[in-house]
Amino acid sequence: MGNVIDLSIFANETLEVTMPTGETIHVKKPTQKITIRMMEMQKTLKQCAEEPEKMFAAINKMLVDILEHNTEGKKYSIQYFEDNMSIAVANALLSEYMSFTSNIQNKK
Image 1 (cartoon, one colour):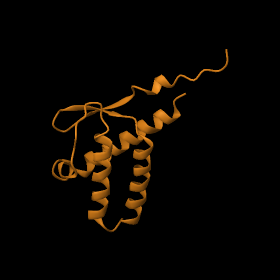
Image 2: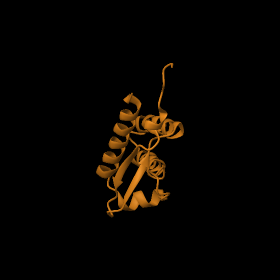
Image 3: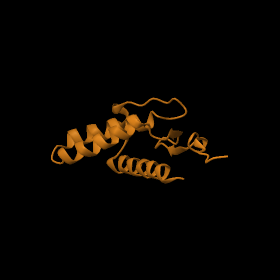
Image 4: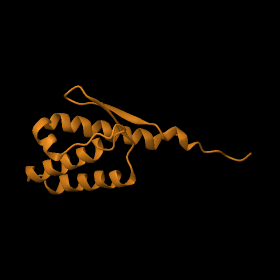
């Protein structure tokens, strides 16, 4: 028998996120589309360093994309993040998701 690659190890990996409300969701691994949006967000943040409104808009859009990619089918709005999340919480979530993404890419 030749080499075997078991792609099923990637199928059920999620990042468990407990929201500030105490609700827990399970965010799925990023799709190519989400990965591209993360790269675009990083580019936008560099270009808009002096424009906080544009920076927060990019961050909040990314948070919606990430958190809506959950196994529970839960939906979020940009308004939810504007009203309920501090920048510290947003940064922690983005950092953890990027770490989760890196761990998946490095898994053999």
